[in-house]
Amino acid sequence: MWIAGLINCNAADDRGRIKRHVVPAFGKKRLADITLGTIMAWIDEQRQRVDADGERELSESSIRHNVNMLSRFFAWAIERGHATINPVRQIPTGKRPQQAHKRDVPWLRDDAQVRKLMRALPEPIDKMFHLGNRSGLRTGELAALRMADMGFLDEGVIRVRFSYDGPLKEDKHGTGKVKWAPAPQRARGARGACQARASTARSLDDAACVIQGAPITTNDLDMVHRRTPDNSERLLDPLLQLDATILG
Image (cartoon, rainbow, N blue to C red; front, side):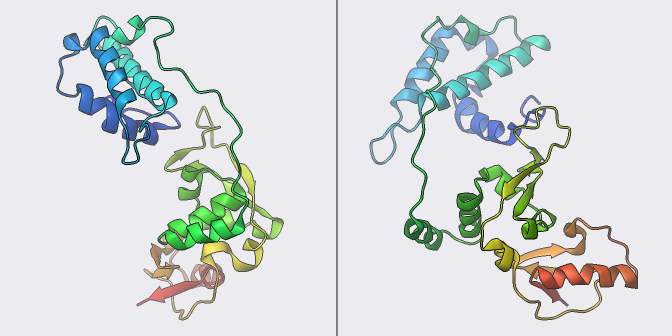
């Protein structure tokens, strides 16, 4: 119930973190059995995890985030009468995993390396990577782009409205905040991953089409969808501009 009820901006990421790190450690325990000692042992275990290269699997920031997820769960449990104390709050000062100080990291400026990475990635991740590299969009923002958001390329910008299936990270209150990201220089002519010519076209009533291999329906176009001849003609023009191949 608690996981399903998460509605914060990063809810999707938090659910994944909870399922990977919190549930395996505490999912089968009674709340009364989760004590300060249990939590400290969990923190130590996370610090000892290493990957195939012998590097630490989780940073202090990631462990801190996991601990915060457990604390949020106990806050919820206390509110609903399932627990009386939050053992995470008993962690002594200085013993909590510390947030790493933010520091500048090298920007990937080597275009040859960018192209190499793109070739190694499957579609459509390769194009998402290129767009993110050139525009600075976050992963969730890239995944949430709709074709209507690319309708401002002539102005040199991309409209950004969502992160995954939720609001932007900056949209703390879910008011529908919109921001604008710089469009890659070549996107204006190429229309990014959605550019080319349509190979076939016909009436759009109940039509499905493919854009760069991704099946969509005309309802996905961010345009008013009425099944009338005049609106079919209105929808056809943007489909032609966006490399739409009508199936049928």
